[in-house]
Structures are given as C-alpha cells and as structure tokens.
Image (cartoon, rainbow, N blue to C red; front, side, top):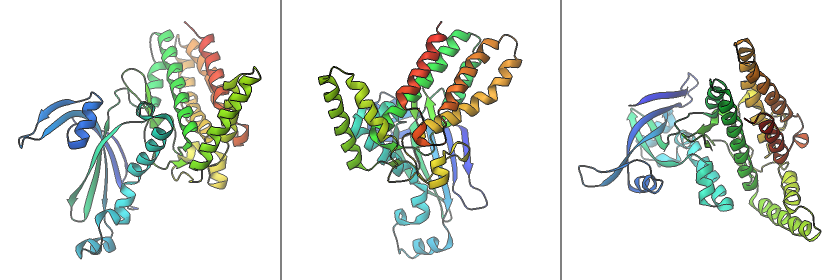
Length: 353
C-alpha cells in the first residue's frame, strides 16, 4: 500500500531529508475527529480501546540529525526539543501552514479555507536514531496528483474536447485560488503548478505553503474598507460596484508583503524578488505564468510532431501567449486577476465544444 512519491534534500550540506509517501495511517484524538468531520477514513477501535480512524494519507516526513552543539544541549537537558534550531527549521512548513490557513479562515471563513488549502490532520515527532529526529505530518491525499501532471494528462486525452475543457477548468480553479490569496493578503513565494494538487473531481488546492508572507493585517483591513466604500459610491452613481471594488484590490495587489517569502523556485522568480527580495499578490501572476509557460513550452513541440494533435498545438499556442503576458518584469504592469480571467474565459469560449 505504501509508496514513495517524492524525495528532496538530505545532501552533504546537512539539509533535512524531505519525503512524501502515500500510506495507510491510523489517526487518534483530535486528528481522528477532524478526519471524521471531513468524511474521510474508516472508524476503528485500537486494542487499548481508543477510537481511531484509518485513512489513506500523504505522509510528509522531515528527517535531520542534530549538530554536535544541539546534541550536547539535549544530553544535559539544557533546552526543550522544540527550541532547537534544527527542529524549528524542520517545522517551518507546519508553522507557515498554520499562519496562512488562519489568515484565510479569518477573512473568508472556514469552508473557503478548507476548499482552498490541503487539509492537515496531524503530526508527530519521533526519535529515529542517535540524535536523529523525524517530523511526520499527515495530509489529505489528492488522487490526481499535482496540477502540472494533471494538465499534461488533459493534453494527452484521446478525447480532445474533454481534455481541453478539463485543462481550462483547472486553470480557472487556479485563478480562483489566487483570488483567495489576494483578498486575504497572503503571498506564496513558491507558488507553481507542482505545488497545487488536484482531487478526484478535478478541484484544485494549494499545497506546500512553506515560505508564505502576509500583508500587514491593518493594511489588509483598510483595503477591505476602501473597497467596500468604493462599491457603495459606484452603486450610488449607477456604476458597476464590483468593478470599483476590484480596482481597489488591484492596486492593493501591488503592495509588498511586510514578511518577504523565504522560499521560491529560481526558474520562476519574479524581478521584484530577485532584485529587491520582496513579493506581492501580483507576484502570483508571474509565478503561475512562468510555471505554466515552462510546461507549455515543453509539450508544444511534442504536440506538433504527434499525428492528429495539431488542434491541441493551436490551443497551447494561445495559452502560451496568456502565460507570457502574466510575466511582465515590472509588477505594476502585470494584468490583474479579472483581466487574466477574462482572457482565459475568451480562450475557453473560442474552444468550446
């Protein structure tokens, strides 16, 4: 049942080893209650009488060996484990997940946050060897894998109309996630197709939020108030209130997060991050456009060479134009989310079945 699906780190430089396994796990306590609330897993009773839930899960494991100075601190009882720099580094993703999902919940409510982010059910810290620790976290499993692989399978569909429909629908779901992030003042430095996961119904969720930055809360709430006032004034003047509010948010998307994201994929890095070490919500357009553009650029020659796939190649050509337009060097010149949505909707309409 268990299989390894991803491995990273663990090199000679001492970075923690990070793995992801697909495995059947047994949850107890609050983790089991969360799983039951979400309607996943199978209830069971452990030999000691405790209630539990068995479920198929994505098990993320971070393994690291303490350096000599931390080993001595533990040996002599001079500090708590959670205060050790190595273990704090191992738990960075869990901390970022907690802060990010809490902000999303505060702004959008629990239901939207749960639909937008991968669900974490629990974690455990275990000593696996002399001065070696493993931090395991248990996440919901998304059967269609990463959005990157899902989009490739859509293009490879023998039923091209169905494949292109699923492809565009998945990109629209990705844009909706960017909208959720924008309105909550969340900036994900490592946003990319690989870090979005797709369930069995084709719904997309955000994963790997390690390195997230947050817009200052007071600035976020001030933007909400200004956007609401702009909508009221537009309605009173018989103008479009939604467009008026969107214009306020578009301007706010250009404001840099107070906390700069500390994780980003170099190949997708926007200019504001490489030059100044900062990001904003508009950085998401660049990140998504860059990762989408790389995928489309890789598959387009293959489609052109494949018999009967010329129509699919034409669709990819249109999508590459969209992806390129999302990657303007200056973050102030990038199309806002309503503009990108309108372009994608135009592509969907032209290629409608």
